[in-house]
Image (cartoon, rainbow, N blue to C red; front, side, top):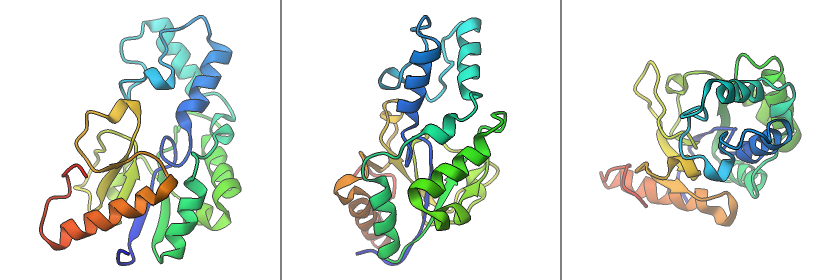
Length: 201
């Protein structure tokens, strides 16, 4: 068991199955654009990489679709992992970057988090475009590279996705089987022994 920690957890692609939601919407609205990468084919975090002008505009339209973020569902085991983190004594906050141009994104995210994780999770949620400005011990996030105005005080733990598999950081492959707890125990042991956090474990 680790010491009590301040854990930050991203929403889209981390707690919430953004890839499945995007693929479902893309198949519904743009089945004639097969070059728009569906989730299992996505090899870059930038979904518009390599697309022509029309295809890129279609991706923008999907990002702006009202209610999209409200429709996303948690990954298997995510809700249970959240409650286990709290039961273990950790301070847990969802830290997510909204798609500011989407007219319903902010409310959608808040409502979705409240529905699946509870009202307390919504009240503690952090909405920011710069996660480097947030204090915490660890950040669970699917994004391959997180940059901002500051040197992060947290250490990132990758949540495995097709577009981040070339990144050498500690990672989990899902929220089931207490993977999150195992990786924290290992990283805490590394810290106390002066060993590097960026070793693959």
